[in-house]
Image (cartoon, rainbow over all chains, first blue to last red; front, side):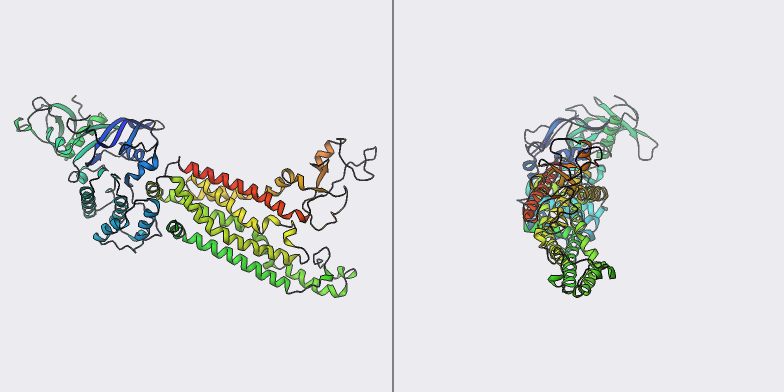
Length: 301
Length: 332
């Protein structure tokens, strides 16, 4: 589902067309269509097994799609792998560092493998974070290892950054630092970032765009602000005027069933009566769409 | 490129160090054993067919000149000492150890430890990434194995003082340049297995089995199928080749074609089947006798070149498979 205003800009940094991927009988991606605009920081959100990692791995030419295609900065990684990967900086799910190598060695290795790798740029990023270049990578903390991974990705000066749940194993402070470094880099380089996570609160302050993936399908794809504005939450199944139900889920305490409503296009959110419904948080939006996708809870559509 | 080579060694520093120590240690031990044998100083007049006669104790005294008895005894003692025996047998093990030790981490460990996505995302063309790592491994093992192989040649020369090791086929695939060739083949095979399995332990186990099989069958296969053209016929039924440079026995030579004894027995009467004098088919015939199939030592480099080419071609094929397959497989 795509809400208006965000999806097709004509200048997509990353595009997927009818992308499907199966692992034996399990469908990881089911005819996914997606366009990530240039210059955006997009949160790719979904529960474990939603297909986030598979989508990123296909973009990295690590997994071959069963059908459909992806383009990274206009290049299909399965047809022109080297050219596509020159345009991508990648941060894997778990910080992958070489045990016996120092931080500086990692940068040297990146330079030897990637012709346009900017060692000085990566060094500066690490210096700013106080990570010693001569420290062995296997003695870095989880946050430092993640920062090293990010510095290597940023050092490629790639136009597109693909980050596969890089925050999953970090403490809150390390998460914040990581996000800040990423945002600074994206802002200064004008690159595009796709940041996957299954924790909404991790990414809601960092991203300007939201893609919800559930059951291998895109459930929502729109600018973040639009996602907040265009949805309402109620405790009862009485819809706000002109709204359509998205999905229902249990409230935090588990006592109430909440329903997420999508307002009609063009509806004025401020005109909507406020006694019965409230503005949905990003987490509520995600929960609503995931509940709809799973077919659980109260299905009001 | 230099950085990549240096970092490859640093990533697998334990294997690099182990390979260097084992190769140089083996070379040093071989030279030491050679010195030990040479220091006995067996007079040239005591040599029989270029070799020091094996001393079997007093029973040899009847035919061995008195001046040769003590040196032969001392030489035999040195030759059968445990250190010389161990060093002599290293040629059957060392190249495979080196190839497997250096080949396993190149791909299998990267995949196992989850670092492959990092490198592959940066490298773009994976075959270039792997080629760089293979090159680094080759730059290390080729000179080290060559040193060890040449030391093994020196040891063979000391074990047979009257025979030029480069004109003798005694254990020739377990020394000299074959150290390098076996090592390279083991390396390439292990890398290819690494791209298939992506796990170190299965790679090590399968590589060991394959290497053992290849080493055990190599000479039988090359004798039977490769060296036909170089074979010269000794008289059928002769009890020994009469020459020093025996390559292989127990093979019948018929009209330029090699048969096993069984083949000829079954094919009794095949045109060209040669029989030992007095063993022609008849009521009391015992059938054909085994003949000696001989390749003389002046064909040494020809044989080495031919077998080297086969091993190198096999290594190249395995390497090509690895470079191809690494581009297709998942990095985990």
